[in-house]
Length: 359
Image (cartoon, rainbow, N blue to C red):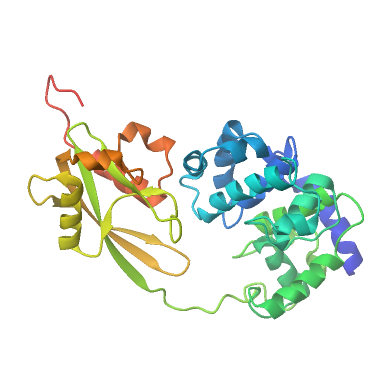
């Protein structure tokens, strides 16, 4: 099978078996395409769909996103992970208002200059929103091309990535760029999957080098493995008599930047001392079950320590970086997913009110 047959075969398969009912396809506007591409980075479609629908319902266009407070954007993103994507999205929307009349620019270099948009995302926006002839190279496409062309080496290496970009450009059709772009992603997500690909269902299987050589399990070459380091932190869960929890905004850089989390310290004694600066404590509190959360470059082990019925110190209420928040308001702020799970678990362990009591 020749390279020239790759795109026609893939498009014919897409017409029969591709995904045609994704929410960002109806309508397929530049803003909706951009938002979906950012959300789909390292996240599966099934996870993204409800987040996408909630996001566009609240912020339907670039200007609405640019005008929204940062906390509202992070709250809408809360639980989706990789929060730098949300911060970059917000910053890029504001630049579009300042520099491009409130719209995404239909220009590759201008898109590439916006925060959070790389070469593949820029190409995907141009191809899907306007039908412009640009290649993409997301994880699914890298896997398809590495197998079909028999490309050795981890695709994250610049030299290997350059080879894959060359192949991606060579396969571009002259028309139907939006469908072709989606078809590539669909093939990688549903047929040419990472483990045990469904080669009998693949429309381009007869030209696949990895299939002919029995190397589908080897390609693409995995990232060189290394043990992830582990970090530990101790967090104070302070609950006042009204059931409100003390939350602290994370720094502007680093993990969970700009989100609301729990006050944290390096060890138990420091966590106790920190808790005492924010509230008048009764007793030593209680240790909750540790929570482990994995990041791309390390594992975080969280040791929570809870104090109930504390009396907030007055100065906390005047600090924009600290808030006493009722659990009913958690959905309205940006909380990292493991912190939300921690707080939901703590709430489940809270004793039921006695008869006649309210909470």
